[in-house]
Image (tube, rainbow, N blue to C red; front, side, top):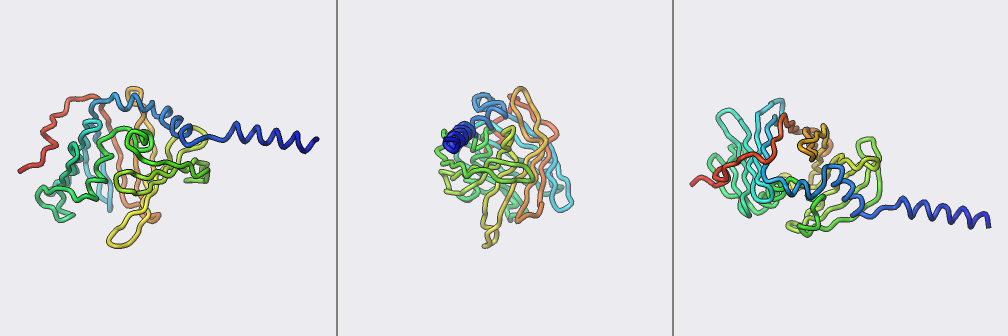
Length: 237
């Protein structure tokens, strides 16, 4: 009888503490300000610094939520531009061999598409047809975290999201990419969470490749619902 009693208590505790993937995602979204609040934002302008290989470069990102984005990296004499606009994309990057604007490749377009949405792919996975699975809990960057697997509907790519178990803050994402014919693990680590008009944004995003830091983005300002001339998303002829 005593064993049965303790079994019942243990079963009750596990049932109460176990969470579904949707419950974890909903709590993560609520912690960030809520999916509905993100989807109500019309535009955003982000300014800051992009750091790589010892260089700190001014950058700006302009977003028409759900439709378009443009990133400008101020490299002296060699502007780097990335644009997604309602299903199409273009880029200009002398470092990638594009000294003049060119259309994106299919792979680049899949990379660009999510960046026009202010809500993360995990937060709004149902609307975009992605698949998610809760993989359990594990240590991530020294803290206990939920590990969620997301399979992107558009390209089949798998990304793992690590969400803190105590307050449902996103710690990092991890995915594998083909880099020059070799598989590499790419991670994005999120920090410096800031509330802006009732929704939260990470002001610092550090990227690692196979465990080594290779670039960091730090935003100094994020402005919401500001005027943006949509002509900036058109590819120059």
